[in-house]
Image (tube, rainbow, N blue to C red; front, side, top):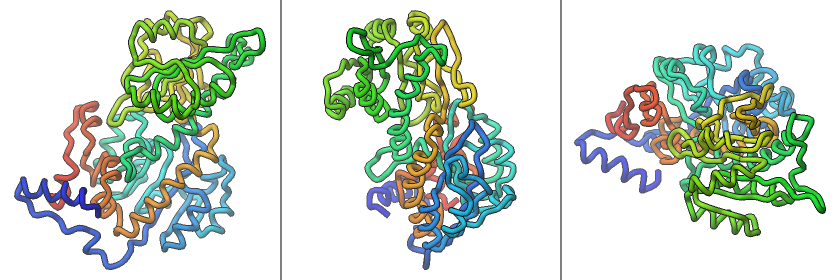
Length: 408
């Protein structure tokens, strides 16, 4: 365990006069053999899978058991025989998968999936705040689940590895999507993003100078379109300028300047990420009303609530809707369009986490040892530990460090 995380716990214990639990790392005599279950995703036309066959091979070699539902990776062109050859077990019975100690998903669990879960299991999945319902939280609490959300999990550098990885993919993908929906084939304005000689290119406004914004800006500039980037973090704007290797229009988010840019935009990409809870609304409905008819909005932030007031969740089957004459694209799992690439990205991050979990004798040891994992845990043994979720649903929440200190 890192010295900084040790000090965090010891400080809390000292102030409260509590008897701390002994570190799971100290009490474990050998590695834990994890039993990992991976069900086939059923929601939001989700095609990704949490682990690739290559990662399964590594985990099995480390002594862990992996049970995968039949055809779970088929949509990403990972087939059952690929997994079985890597050492995984394949089953047609999804209920057997949900008997595993650790459940890995790339979509939030549906109520019927939670019903199949066992008491005291570990769930690792996204939250997707706009679709999250209180009944789901309550069901997980009743089953004493320990749950970790990809969106809030940090790495050793204090960054969000899952968010960053999916953001890189999304940043490149959204520009291709925008090109599709500006065409006449998708009821767009019939505009080519990059333009041609004698014809001006499309104008793209990007909200957010983070990873999505940077990769989107690179792709837009590569196609020859004009780009404007807004973010209230000046450092992010400076970093974006440096990474795209070209001078682009950047600004902090001033309503008057933003409104003016939106009025002339052909494409607006919302790429604001919240570290704790819901993404703030940057573009009001009034601003959308003033945009050109047939222009295109793509809200990458929709999985955290969306940064456009007019955003509503859509799916891959019906990805768009029109409001005030503006096309809106609000699919929360954009990266599922390139599911094989996204699955490799998920797997690359999850595999060392799973190995570390085994070496630290399970999820409890991993939480104790890793402050970044603790940041991603929103429920511990049925206790809601995320303050933002508690505030949204008006529920009681507990401090994760205190739960450990009380030897819960």
